Image (cartoon, rainbow, N blue to C red; front, side, top):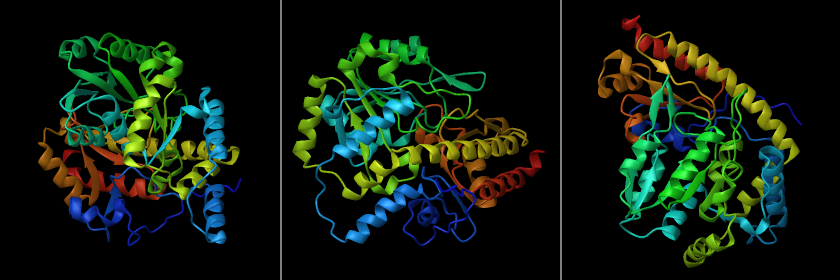
Length: 393
């Protein structure tokens, strides 16, 4: 494998990058001197094997419909078995246009308008957007804080249930808190779903981006008795920075549960993107695995640099990152209202970061920072944040 150079500064401005080219419109931070730390994609090139797959397609020069996906399915099965210890049947795999699309299909397949969909908030903002757009009700079950990290509040959640809820969407590992849920916590979530007769959609898109010393457990391994109500979602897109390929794996172990999902896909005429299929097949390989190992080590260094720098500012606290590349910073210790600390970050530090309120209950005093960028950029961001809050020191 060619040694990846994650320190390489790649100018993404003017390339139709949502993260960089939409920053000023969304945050008032000009790309010319701003730092984009909001959209959850990386400023790194993918492994060489992925680039080679794209170049081979371009070299052939014919871009027809994709067929014979056996190699693609085998690659997914190889990855899940070798990286996560999970055996997947080929017929259990559905290919969607990313996992936001996969989430929307699940909402359509397993609930009806007016039904409640449970979210463990604060959580990935697209979930609530999809649920609401589909005419379902968002039922927020807030996570609790213990020693600066998120934990489950199962008794509190039980008290919120009315019997009209049909689904729980789990984010595992958690975005934005960066938690790697333990097997015991996953078991408790599974039992909660059984108790309230909920379909469990487990979005595990960040499952490969786990910091050293942590271990992710796939939900089917933590709770093998709930396969009749479990939908798994995984993808190459976060792991290998392929978000623009819009491809995701919805894996449904139970044959009966596959029927409604397949029906929704058929009704909407969904078929795969050939570039995404080729890229995913190449990524889920030994070369891709070695690249991910190097990536995680690099992200761990970025995490430590960011946490140390942020923690040096009185009133700021960065939640311990167990997985993902998304720093979750609490500004409540400053005593400032969200409008004030957001203005300092955007106007003084010239950094675009996700506003915590968009993640639901419990997020108001937070901002989410994307650390998947060259270390020099993280260092510059830390320096700017310290400068923007220098009066507190």
